[in-house]
Image 1 (spheres, rainbow, N blue to C red):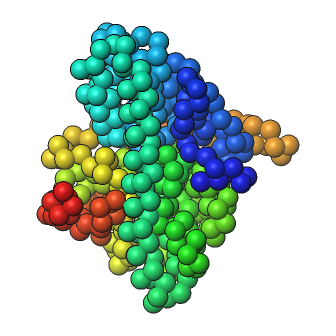
Image 2 (cartoon, rainbow, N blue to C red):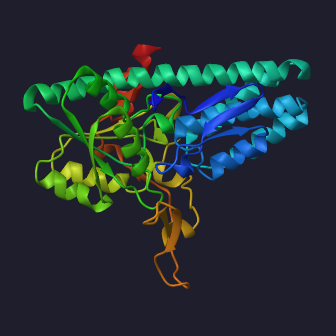
Length: 358
């Protein structure tokens, strides 16, 4: 996508370094970083300078390339995998990328590993772009169908599942971008998505692309649905099970409940690497990241002089919990929009789609 007319991906190679967009500074400042060491990539993932399941995987792949530049030995390879695996536990794309890189690099002589790692990281990034564009094309059909019946289409989304969360295009936002570019009258209700306020990233993206949107509080979605202001809910995902249970940013489950109660279609836009075919019990087996309570107790923004500000919203002794994700059972999900097509949100639906596409 473009920022001020300049095309960007969210991770890229720059010589022997890796470029990223520092998402912790958005939407107030667009700032890119150049990472020279795998430890910096691990920090970027952990601190959410890069975030979003597909981007985390792509960034980790580039981290391998940096590590192999410094030391391509067997111990360094295993240490890199271990370091990156412990950055964030919930998004399955991270483990997928780590497994792919280690499988590719382990059989090679150390002298060949750095070049191979760069090539594999580039391949993962290019594949992600193609995958997201395919998701966009499949999801576009849903928006077209609503537009044909109603004219303007109101989509509600949660968290940020746009190009900032992937290498380009995004997952949940990809169909919206394509619909806008086609001239369809689409408007997006954007959940603020506390406590990290990733909804602000979505508003920044949509505004940059010229897509009509309105920011709402996390608790407003049900009200909007009751009053006929939402036609579709499309969210991303950090992990989807073979049974089509959807693990996504905290608060997604509540949106799905409200959508079910109001008869509104609820879709998750999911790249193939985000599907975890090994999980049988989503509630018990998916590791839910518990992040710092400070993310709840403190809010960040800018003051009246547009200077960065961090404000505590409670007393010093306030106790807070901060689970970062929840699981939406498949029974609440209308369908899974993948790069291979749209599947019914059932084990048979996903299996049939992937059997047909194999």
